[in-house]
Structure formats: structure tokens, C-alpha cells
Amino acid sequence: MISDYVTAFFKMDPAHLEAFVADWLNLRRHVYVDWTRCSGAGDGGRDVVGFETNRRYEGPWTNYQCKLLRRNLSVTDAVRELGKIFMHVAAGDFTLPTKYVFVAPKGTVRTLSDLVGHPEKFRRTVIERWDAVCRDHLVKGQATPLTPEIRAVVEAFDFTGVSVLDGAKLAAQEDIGPALVRWFGADPGPLPSPEALPAVSLDEAPYLAQLAAAYGARAELVEATTDDILAHPKFGEQLRDQRLRYFHASRFGRLYRKRVFEDVLVTFDEEIYHGVVDTHRDDGHRDALAQVNAVMRVAPLLPLTGPLRDHASSQVKQGTCHRFANEGRLPWGI
Image (tube, rainbow, N blue to C red; front, side, top):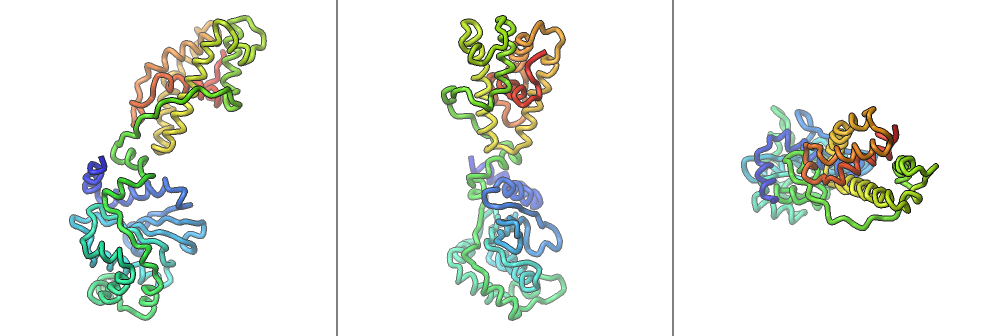
């Protein structure tokens, strides 16, 4: 439930919230070509920045300002944070952001919510409250008056680009799932019901050729093809089962690539590989088909770790071995 993640956000420290947001931006490659984390002293009012083009600060960019406070984000908090950006832009340190997102798990006070909804009112508030909120609080031991240069920056900024992500909105972002899995152990969810087995495709050629050779040797068919084995009265159904397993594994990887970070899938592969490789290499196999059958018996029994452990069926584990064969990592044949 989203409320569980909101509570988890409250328990993070500020550095971890920034790292979480950075992980999320890393997933948003459809929005940002790159991102950077600017936390720490001298960050210029930026925590995590997403760049929409390779021009980086010379193109459109978004500032994600993480505010993990024990209370709701106030008008003073928001004006002061924006003031840092305006001060640095006026000094020529970087350009104005296209968008400015406050990541505030506990949300905002009602007055600030009202300002976010009224961009021109927000602009006036920054100008009117500069002396009280920003002047003596942006640079330690130094006053920062609202100079004509800073005021021009405030006037140039598009306040419609200011928004707030509270904990519930952050957890509900449609592309944030892999970050929730990594940080909070969220369940990436089961696969939908399988589709019908598709026709043989070119991407299956390597492992199917290896299996055709293995079955062909047992059936005493010289240079047997996939079609020859599929038509065989004994081995045809077995080869269809092997294809079904490969299909399950391919579908598993394709769908979970959208739900978890790549390192989760790499770990999954490594556990399968090291669970079957010794059986695959065993010198005691009478022929290649015996090797295949031995690995197919071992694979379903493998204990797995990580967030995908409860979603990997026997067919997925077995099919992953066929994928290894297809990729040349563990080819069938002795």
C-alpha cells in the first residue's frame, strides 16, 4: 500500500531520500538524458538535477529539492530554497531550471499549497518576503539583498514549473516501481497469465539448433532440423516443452526489466547459472540430450534470493538455461 511507503519515507535520513530520488531519475530515461546529485555544502540550492538534453544546464533542466522535515514544508522553507537558486542564477553559476520540484514527504502547509496553485501570487510572495526570509539566510555571515539582478531572475522564472511531491504522490509515480523494490523491498508483482506459444522465430535459432542436434543424435537423424524434431513422434512434444520454457523465461525477463533495476536481473541470472553449471559440465552425460535433461531436472529445484524469487516458476528457471544456450553462455552439447 502507498501508505506503507509514505511511512518508510519518514524514516529515511535526508541523504537517503536524495539517493532514492536519484535512483528514480535514473529510471526516467524517457524524460531525462542524464541526472546528477548536487547534495552537500555548495550545492547552489540543488539536490538532484535531471537534464532533458545533452546541453545540460544550457538546456531545460529540473531541480528536485528534497526536504525531509519533521513538519510540513512552509512558505518560508520554499521561498528560501527558491531564493538560493535565484541568487546563483543571478551570479551566473547556472541557468534557471525549467521545473522546480519540492520532494517533501510530509507535504506542505495549506498556504504554500495555495501559492503553488497561483504562480503569479507565488512570484509576488518571493519578492515581498525576500528581506525577511532570504536576505540574511542564504549565505552565512553575509547579506544578500534583492538586487536588480536577482529581481530580474525572479521575474524571469516560470513559477508554473513549481510543484510538490509529498510521500503519497512520490510513491504513486508510475515509473517509480524499481526504486521501491530496491529501497523498501516492494514486491514487483506476479506476471500476467501467459500468452499462447508463438511461432518459431529467428532469435531462437541458436538454442533450437543445439537441441535439434541433441534430439537428432538420439533419434539417429543426421543433420536434423528444428522442423524434423517437431515432427518426430517421440521428441516433437519434448522440443515444444523446451520452447515453452524458453518463452516463459524470455517473457519473464522482458516484463521484469520494467519493474526492477538491471542488477536484480543480473543477480537472478547468476544464481541460475551457478546452480546448474556443474551439472551442465558433468563428464558423465552419455550424450547432449542427457546433459539437457539433467539440467532441466536441477533447474526447478534451485533456491533463489531477491525480489524475483517468488515469481520465477519452474519453467522460467528451465527456460533461463535455454536462454544461456541461446546466448552462448552454456551451449547444449558435449
